[in-house]
Length: 341
Image (cartoon, rainbow, N blue to C red; front, top):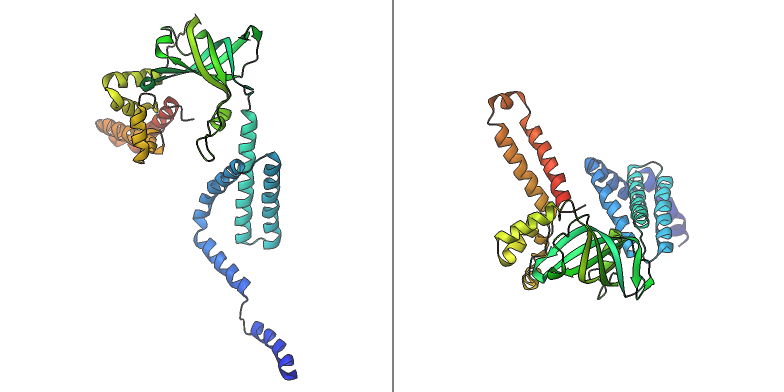
C-alpha cells in the first residue's frame, strides 16, 4: 500500500513529460481549430447575438432585470478577455457577449425614444385631429384612421381631457366624408380605450406594437365626421393602388392581390383569412423578404433586358451594375410603399 501511495503521484509528471495533454487543452485546441476553419463566417454571428440581446429585452420583465442582464453580459465578456489571455476563442465569445449587451441596450433606448402617453381608461371624447394615415378595411366595411390630435379642444362630457399623441380610430364607410384624405383636419366624436393587451399569454400583443408605433389609444368614431381642412394629397399612393386592385378583382381575390402588392389586408374576408391561417399560408399575406426579393429580381431583369437593346450601352456600360442599382431603388420604394419600415 505504501509503494502504491508513493508511485501514483510520480505518474503525473511522467505523463506531462511524454506530452499527454489535459482535457482542457484538448477542448481548447479543438475550438481554436474550428474557429480558424470558420474564420470568414464568424462575422455572421454578430446579427444573431444582436438579435439575441433584443429578444432578451422582450423576455425580461422590468428595467431592473435589463440592467442586471447588461451588466452580466458585459462582465462575462470582459472576464473572457481576462481569462482567455488573448486567445481567439476568448475574443470571439467576448465579442458575442458584448454584442448581445449592445442589442439589449439599443432596444431599450428605442423603447424610451418612442415613449408616448397612453390613455388611462375608456372614455368618449370629441376632438380635432390631423389624418396621418388611411387604411380601408373593405371586407369589414370600415375605414381605419391614424390621427394626430391637435389643439386643446378635446372634451369628455364637457370636461377638457388630454389625449395621447397618436390615436387609431375605425369609421364606418358610410360615415367617412368624401374630402377625407391624408393631411386633412377632422372634427369627430369617438369612444376610445387603451391599446388592448394579449387575450391569452403568448398571443398577439397589440399593446406592444402600439407602443412602438406611438399609438396611445384606439377606438370607434361616430358620425358626423366633419372635415374642417380638406386634404391636398388624397389618401396616398398605397390606398389608391389598393382600391384600384380591389375594384378590378371581386371578393377576397382582390384583397389577396392587394395584400401581395401593397401589404393591405383589409379587403380579405375573415373566412378567407382564417382559411389561410389554417393552411399555414397567412405569412404570404404580409410583405416580407420574399415579396421584396421578387420585386428586385423583376426590376433587375427588366432593366437589364431593356438596356441591352442598345448596342452602345451593351458595349460601354456595366449593365449588371446599373440593373442592381435600379433593383436597390425598387426595394427602397417598395418598402416605403408598403410601410414596412
